Length: 109
Image (tube, helix red, strand yellow):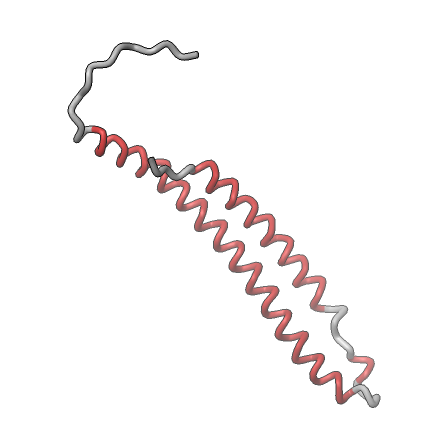
C-alpha cells in the first residue's frame, strides 16, 4: 500500500532548511573576498573583468540555490501537514467501501 510518511517529509524539510542556511552562509562568504579591486590599475585588469562576471554569476547562483532549498523545505512541511490529514481521511474513505469481514482477534507478539 502506498503511504506518505509526514515524519519523513518533515525530516527532509529540516535537512533542506539546514542546507539553505549553509548555502546562504556560503553566499555571504563569497561576496567580499572574491573581488579583485586591487587589480584595477594593472595588466590583470583585462582578466579582472571576466573574473567579475564570474563572481557575479556565482553569487547569483549561490543566492538562488539558498532560496530554492529554503522554499523546498517550506513546501515539504506543507506537504507533510496535508498528508497528516488527507491520508487519514482517504484511508477511512477507502476502507468504508469494503464490506466488513469477521476476524478473530490476533495476539500481538
